[in-house]
Length: 135
Length: 200
Image 1: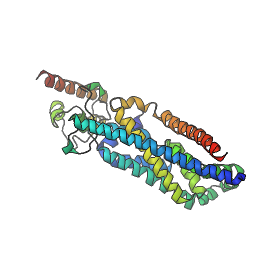
Image 2 (image 1 turned 180 degrees about the vertical axis):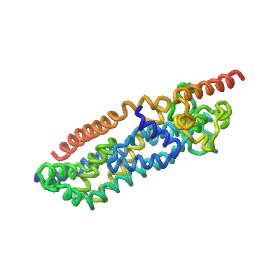
Image 3 (image 1 turned 90 degrees about the horizontal axis):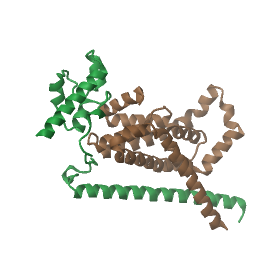
């Protein structure tokens, strides 16, 4: 076999083997994800009526120290399972943008110190969690 | 975490899939945006129930693929002219550039697919592919596979490490390089050995 033909064959085989390996890897990832979803559905964490949401079960009670200034009120409500108006009432938040506004932006617009405001939000969430746990 | 990435995360929470699409699209064209950390963060938000995982996958994959294709065609159509205007067209005829072209052409699959895992490598390979006028169908075929794999890998990382994804942000740049490098080395070594044996 001449050298150029060998080189061409090498290139073609390299391509096919590489693509094949990647397909195997991606198939394994998909199989693993499918099994994960099935397990979540069987355990009742992922009700089938809600479709394929991939929402993971909460690994215990989330810690309010997770809250940071770039987060929005909507995101915090979702992650900490808060009633949608809880933070609004607790912190006296006014404005039509709520809950789609980040903490840092809200603090800045209201001439408040961002770090202090974030601490207030953390404390409010902590109070809600303490109340929910005591009930 | 940089203040830029923090504002990007806020945008991700506010404008959701549009932000994810734009970040991935622009990073493929060459803007130095944190596409991989954004995808990991979006997957983490989806695992917390804030975003929809299907739409995260769709917006990240479509943003990447459309960005790659746009970059390829922009460079293919206007690249030589732009290089001529800025006085760099002579470099297209240098032996060094021809070598780079030949390498990309010979190892299309490993180069195109592995480069998808690192944002700077993606932009550079897109530019070289456009300048070298690589066959578009082959380019599109490999980048679609590469981008799907890349997004799936980062989404799985974000999903698995949802509770501690912020810690991952610090290492994700090196992580991308490592994946690309390890994939390229392992595949090249393995395939060369197998093929040499087959040809003997």
